Amino acid sequence: MKKLSNFILTIILGVILSLFLPWWAVMLAAFLSGAIVRLRNVAAFFVPFGAITLLWIVNAWMLSNANDYTLASKIAVLLPLEGNVVLLILVTGVIGGLAAGVAGLFGNQCRAIMAKED
Image (cartoon, rainbow, N blue to C red; front, side, top):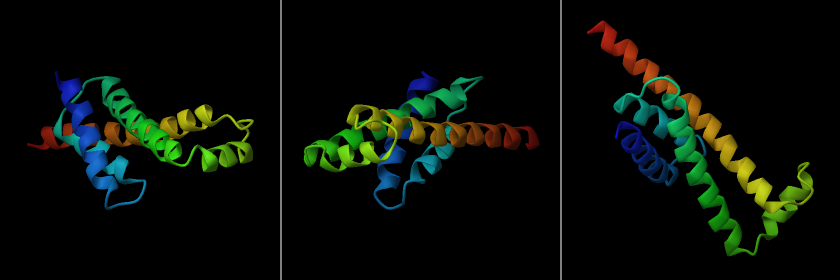
């Protein structure tokens, strides 16, 4: 139950903060959700990772689909992806997920440190 609530909270905070802040808003969202909902072991990394990966993949797909993948195909040619738009969208999601996973783990550890001081 904690994993699902952290997952949903990360996505909600990520969407809201992304409206006002740059790309690193997902890191802030993952940090806050990690500090609010305590997770154990590797879930502290992989739950925010999965949430933001899903968010960025859906967002990249919606933005690319709106212009018939024109910009995404040009960027996929510039990167060593051989013009593969699907791979570009997956790489985009994984990069955002890694940033969020590290931030979520940091938020979880900050919560643990603050709980020990009380």
